[in-house]
Structures are given as structure tokens and as C-alpha cells.
Image (cartoon, rainbow, N blue to C red; front, side, top):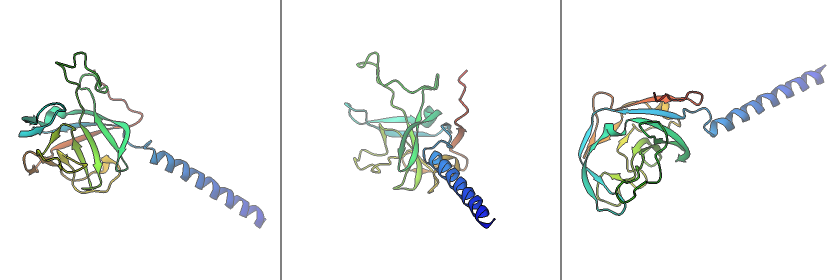
Amino acid sequence: ISLFLKAIYFMNLIGLLCGQIYVSRKQSRGDYQCKSITVIIKDEVWEESVVKVPGKDVEKMVLLYPYFNGHYNQDGSSHDGRPVYVEQNKFDGTEFSTTSPDPVHIRVKVPARIKYCKSIRAWVFTHEYIRKSNSTRDDSDCPWLLRSEETDVFDIEEVQGPWQIWAGVIGRTDGCILSLFFGYPDVSPSFS
């Protein structure tokens, strides 16, 4: 009988380990994370943002942060071991086109991104063309426009506390600057 009990105990142990390995692998692939977020940035304005479009000189422009409100989906890439969320087309929720019907007069829209930056230990909102200064050393790999408080959380859903916003200087409002609404793998956003 003791051999039978040992065999049952061993089979239970193998079953539990297989289950743990299965769940751990799916978790490391991001199968249990939300696949999309809806971003709502309050009415914040940066009067003299620095915009550098390839092939053009640096321009100072007014940046209306609510312009970036909308849906952001995981694109399958990661940065510092965490998923990257990419801005989607506001009209139909699809990815932005990578080609232009008239490249001379119509620029291709470059989406904003939300990613984690290990160097500053924060989730950040970035845009490829927008920088805080003319300097080429603008925050190395994390030229953030909005950032969460310092955190090590893997999932953006777990980010706590207020976000900081760059508007010429680091600002923080009393209320919420950034609202995130989460979508899960089995739930598709509706654009009707």
C-alpha cells in the first residue's frame, strides 16, 4: 500500500508541475494581459513642443495632449521585458497605414507608444518625433512625454499613482492626467 500511495503522490506532483509550467509559459508570452487600452489625457497643452520630422528642420509647435486620446493595442513587441502599446487609428481602431497615397503632400501618421522604461523605472508615453529639447541626448531610450511614478510592475493595469506630464517643465495636476481603460484578450473594442 505504501508504494501505491507514493505513486499517487508522485503523479499529483507531476500534474501540478505540468500545470504550473503551462500557466507560466502562457503568462510569459503575455496571454493573460490586456491586449488593448483606451487612453484619455486631460486638457493639457505644451506651448513650445520640439518636433523633429525626418527630412525637416526642428520646429516648435503647440502640442495638444488630448490629440493622442484613443485606443492603443499591443503590437507584439516588447521594451525592457514588457509589452508596448501602439496608438490606433481613431476612426476605425486599425493600425495606421505605413504608406501615403501622396508622399509629397501627405505625411504618414506615426503613432504614439506607451512602454516601460527600465532606466527610469516607469511606464512612459512617447512619440518618435516629439522631444523635450533640441538635444540629441534627450533621455536616451526614453524620451517621455508622460510617465508614471516609479514602479516595477509588469502589467500596466497595476500602475498606481498620478502620472507626470512634460509641458516645458515636469507638471503634475491635482486630478488624474491620464485615464486608462483596459481591454482583455476575449473582448474586442467596438467602434460604432
